[in-house]
Image (cartoon, rainbow, N blue to C red):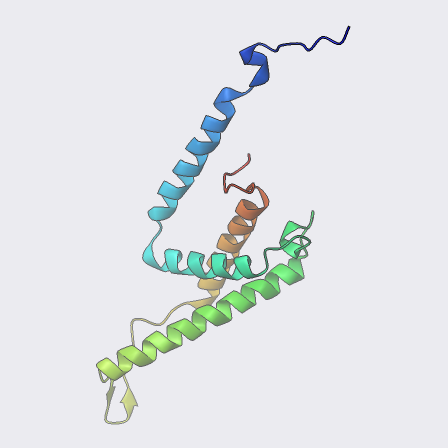
Length: 143
């Protein structure tokens, strides 16, 4: 009496709208990220590249409660990369326009408030970690 039971369609796929909701969430997220300011896009790219390097099974970004100090150190590593890129861009710009006059430096409006940027980078980092923790292998967010 080994009869196989045939399941109706609605029981075989109990949540057909669930996957469409995931696609909608992903699309909304990508659209809103495209609207980030230019600097935020740069920082996000650096953060995503850094997280890709430490994205492996058992990584601290997948800990149930990531260590605050380790996240702070990761933020400092990212800030070092950002500052290096910024200083390289400044050198290139200074070579193009000679900002110094008679050995005296002119105040530049382009000086960045690094404390604010560090806090902003920390928020972006936590968000990117959240995305990685809730993404499945196909890159779709799981909420």
